[in-house]
Each structure stands twice: as structure tokens, then as C-alpha cells.
Image 1 (cartoon, helix red, strand yellow):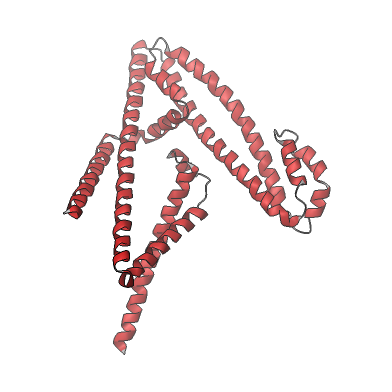
Image 2 (cartoon, rainbow, N blue to C red):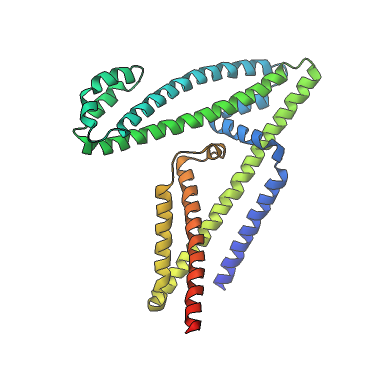
Length: 315
């Protein structure tokens, strides 16, 4: 009886999630997909811009546009400064990676002169100089390279996200500016209302999307929990005949772990557009890796089983 109740609950939740997904699909205008992604990126980084545009009137729109154009120019200057630091760190990292046992000592001896030119505009010049000076020999270099590379990837990741936001915000402000410069007051009012309606619709769609994704995660979590619970229960009760289940679960966990470990934390342009974090992107990589390995394993198992059966039948 309990199992039936659980199955009914899971089925009901799955149906609800499918309904929400269908509602989102019918409400979502695919022609405005890029605008939706743009709004989400701005909403995540600067919700004030979205709120001010939604509250703007034809009379106040000019002030809103001017305010955020000034903000974005300042943001662009700060982003250029971050790009400079990123490029310096990348060059330094390539220096270190190109070293070998033969060239290390010579680079070490001339590092002071190299540092003066390389880190001339670097905000963390002394930190990098002190860090390399603490590397006693070539064998110790690898751990230092890993530390610098980790810092570079974090800086690059932050830069890419900010760059994507800059592009999205400038695009949205440009639309508002075009509306603001419209000669016809009637058209200006209509275009502004259309933009505000789109922003409102995008917000509503984003909330709906978050709800069904949350339900999907919940459903997946409950399903996984039940699978593990009943599998472990059977293992405890009938260990001699069901230990293979434990082995399969352990192998599955190892595959997921390997997929997460080898997954790149550097977001691709599509991942950035989707609003994924580095951790979330690594989880996506882990899921994809697990799927590939599982499919390959299933195909391999089918082939091996067929070959073994054919050999046995010939005998």
C-alpha cells in the first residue's frame, strides 16, 4: 500500500512538472529568445536597470537612459582594467608553463628584469614576484603553476560573466535609447509600453521556469533516494544474492565523480547565456560524461552478450 501511495505521489509530481513545462513552452516566444536571455543576464547582475525601465514614462525615459549610459561607460572602464590584469596573468602563466628543467635556472636568474616589464601595470606585482621567488627548484614549480592557474581561471570566469552582462545591458539600454529618440510621441509611448510588457513577461516566464526546474530536481532527488533506499534494503536483507547491486551503485558513483573531476570549470558562451555557475557547469559535464559512459557500457554489454551467446550456441 505504501509503495502505491509513493508511486502515485511521484506520478502526480511528474505530471505537474510536465504541465508547467508545457505552459512555459506555449507562453515562451521563441522569436524573443535572445531578448529573454538578455533580460535574465541584466536581471541577475543589475535588477535596478530592469525596474527603472519598467517604471519609466515617456517623460522620464531620457533620464533613465542617460543614467545607465554613464554607469555602463564607467563599468566598461573597470572591465578594461580587469582585462589588462587577466592578460598579464595569462602571459605570466604561459611563461611558467613553457619552462623545463633546462630553462628554469636561466629564467629564475633573469626573473627580476622580466618582472619589471611584465608586471609594470599589474596590481599584484609584489605578490607574484614574492610567490615565484619562493619556488626553490623546478620540482616545486608545478604546485605554484597550479595555484596561479586557479587564480587565472577565477579571474577569467569573472571577466567573462561581466563581459556578457555588459553586452546584454548595453543592448537593452540601446533599445531604450532608440525608443527615447523616436520623433512621434505616440509611437514613443507605444514602443516603451511594448518593451515594458516584454520585460514583465520575461520575468513571469523566468519564475515559471525556476518552479518547474525546482520540481524536476525534487522529483529526481526523490526518485534517486527511493532507488537507493530500496536497493540498500534489498542488499541488507539478501546480501548474498544482491551484492551486485552495490557494485553497480559504487561504479556509478565513481563514474559521476570522475565526470565532475575532469569537467572544465570554464564556462562556454552557451553556458554563460544559460546563467550557469562554474559548479553547475561541472555538474552538467559530469551528467554528460555519465550518460556517454552508460550508453557505451550498455552497447558494449549487448555486443559482449551477443558474442558469448553465439559462441555457446555453436558449441
